Image (cartoon, rainbow, N blue to C red; front, side, top):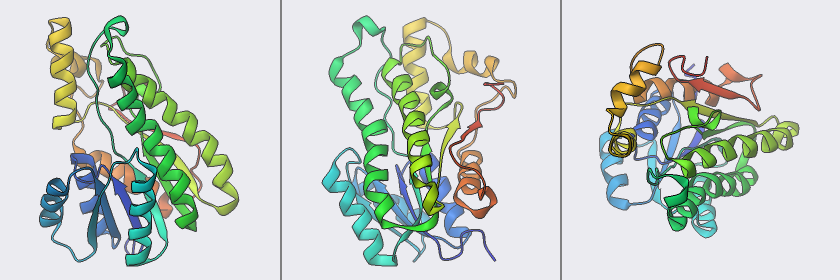
Length: 253
């Protein structure tokens, strides 16, 4: 039996590298996957790449309550109640000292990461089967600070941990597990954009600097993060809730 056979899964940020790597793995393990992302064009390319009848998509702004309810309703209408909710959507903001950080950008980052995860849980929990799993993508910077000038991103990633811990206790009577996933730097365009900002702000090669600080001396591949998401999504993690799963090459050790 596959690890997610006939499980109904929602992945926000589904057209990005971690979302797509997770979707490929979940479908291979027997799941039905609803991809959620901001742009129809990105979702169309993602579905073409997946090439599976067990994948569908809904375009949505995850910080919008009506959009969130709509993607949950669309999933349930298509396949039935949800077993796995992977709140993975994110945006990077900019790299600036806090004294120069644009307030509107700070609000946008908080809206996508924190409000987006909050709304996913608010509207997702009533649509979920008992015994399911909620996964929220945080970051290594969700458990420590950062000098790179990404104050909004760091704040949002810490806030997601508090949200997870609160919801994990509330959802436990229904045997719904709630955990955060904490990647270190990942070899994808999202991380590359952050590193370009850090490099410009510091005058140093941010990619090399980060690799020097990672005990395994490299960035993660999206597929490695997806395998950790599969662990949290499946019964392999049946006694794991309220936890922060670090997937960071040893950086937080």
